[in-house]
Image (cartoon, rainbow, N blue to C red):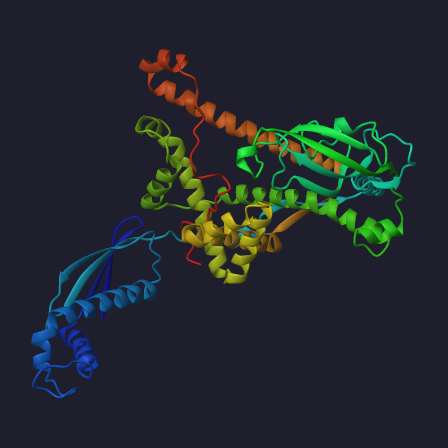
Length: 483
């Protein structure tokens, strides 16, 4: 195989590949030998069919298979040996080919630019740790205790009031008839929470132990028996018990009921939980700082085909006029995304970062936990959409790269209080919100300057903020990562 490379312009290259006739014929001979033992032709014993006969019968089809394989193998080898990483699918142009001929073709590629990643280790970012005051931990434990009230039996003559727990059996009817699910035993209702049927609780205020009370209620929209939806039902309730709430004693027993060893262990666990709540958000802030620093790194040229593809994604769902209006802005966004992705991907490759199937499954499980009650729907979505799984892989890959950059870079370590953490996160949120608004506004002003004829129309039109389908959180490594 002979390979010559010609630089056309910038990142565009033509790779000319030449394979002599003898080599191509040897590939064909191997293929004839491969099928020789499997072909059954009248007048010939299995495995004894002459090559000339095989050539007449199957030559054209076999050459097609051989050509496909040789093109795939040699083009891959030509790219690898010359350390060329194509940005997108190369174009192949066959010049000379055919049975008993040499093979010559040209592979036209847009090469990914060379990227320098050593400077990533000098990136500076803020790394926060939150010091949780003991009073914050005690406050959180008291909130937990408040949401897990304890009840004690009330005296038989005590009338139920809001906040009390009423234990009851009930038998319900609609138009005098029982229905499926019309009976309940030992049902517990905390009066005032209105968690059973709307207005049910209020009618139990004033009941006493061993009393019988008839409650009227409308069956809800989501009632399983569809023919009974919005029907008025009568509930004959037998009051089994009335219980008054009592303050939960925060002690070792309380802590053990929550899975801790004792109260001190619970305080340690709760303190860590509060810290983790802020740590995740602050870590994301650190990664955002790293990404913004990466955006400052210069790359001489970005492949036009990648920019065009990204702009198409950003303008999805827009009509032609709106897409054209936002093209300049989307082009800049696309360049930033692609540049960041190229740098992260190069860093990932140099550090041999891989994404395992276990990590993909862990990310899927994370998604499932975020959507309780919809686990089956989410799982079905990922099973039926390989592109969604690929997107998850890109997210995990980028996360691993950023974590490694954090380890190698130079953090500015800061220990802050919970209040300071909340202030930092609030300011970051407001900054991002204002930046997005001003970014859109600036582009609108530039558009107006470029086209003075449409000033009057622009003033009368309601401004619309573009809503592209590609979100900001999209993995920027996805376009260039092959992991």
